[in-house]
Length: 428
Image: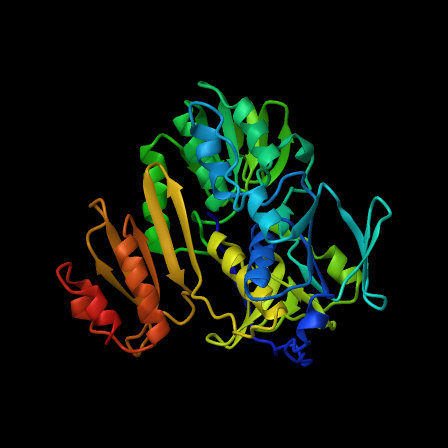
């Protein structure tokens, strides 16, 4: 899955709400509405119920589907011999057993923060006591001539439409060498397509990887037959080709863009919530407006460990931030301080990264990049692990997360020794 981290050094929201302390009788009368039936919203609904909230929970979503897994959309959904069914996070029975009401395919038009009501596009008005915005984001479309010709990948329908187009011999141009663009390139190659990737930056996954790992990813794709073009800004798309500013012309029967995500903050902005690249929330998911929370991709949340706001786009963040915020809305106040983590499957290799590279000055390698499994631990000047990147190295990344959380200097020589005990190092 994709992961990008953006940070802000600004202050936390000044307003602080008190924990929910209503009596059991009053709790059963409260209404919690969740706007956004994706991963964060779906997990928040279950979490607040399991945390003891006894009131009404209403989960509202734009799409006609209940919350489903998005990582397979750029992987199994494109390459499986037969179109696989969606992977639902929770069954309809689980929602019913927990008395979670769903209104799917019901876009929200506006939020009235004074009356504490949500207005649906169909005219319905729903009162809330507490509201969670888990509106996520949408795939970014380039504002260029012919931009309407590009396919995007964000939803189940997007994946099904793309899958239907992929066939052996098709010339596919992928705009963007981020996680989504590269996963689509890998899947299209496996489907027998001739694939070229066009990237405006100098390297693949430049916001997430060190130069060494970016070079390794580039080599992985080239070895699979993918042609890569860097420092190439797309100027326009014609019926059979992509025109770039550097004079590059890429012949293509199909153009797919993976150029990032735009957070769905319009509802929040119109309602007067503080927005700074995402809906500004504290470590409990509370926004700048009373009784409104935000979680998942759409949130710019305060992280106590890093002392600043982060904006993350990853599978685990959407799930765990939704859970933490749902519990906070139910009165269980536990600061959200997960270690950032993401993963991606490309050409049979599993890439994982944990932590943030900010402040790292030394890379300690464990295993050779010519082998099947290897990892690099990214240390600061004091010898503390700040981040780690690995290929087919789940054990190393798991240990790295413990080291990051511990915040203690580690023995670099022992870290690099393939026979060294990572768990012992992680425990200090």
